[in-house]
Image 1 (cartoon, rainbow, N blue to C red):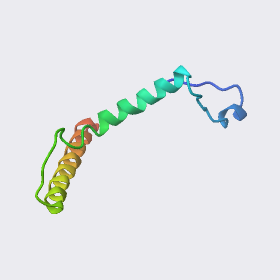
Image 2 (image 1 turned 90 degrees about the vertical axis):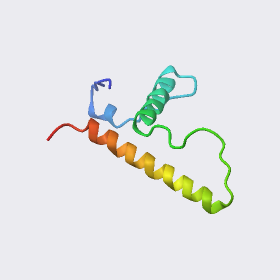
Image 3 (image 1 turned 30 degrees about the vertical axis):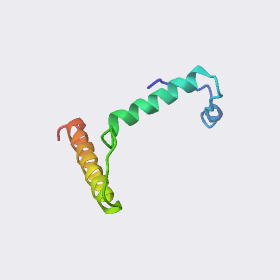
Image 4 (image 1 turned 45 degrees about the vertical axis):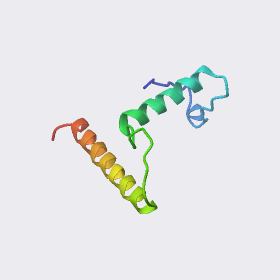
Length: 83
């Protein structure tokens, strides 16, 4: 994370807007995408799945959500500093 230095308090309250085409915008977007991949990962396995009913689909989706939730919390526990 870069350190930003300000000459006055007024400079601190100015928002840092990035305009289309600004290289800093692309770096910020890439950083957010990277953070999302590191913290959330893939939610659902890739592929096409057939279901006999909407209930079967919902059961499978709920299983995937629970698995992603457990995996996310397992990653958080591994990343947490020891007590």
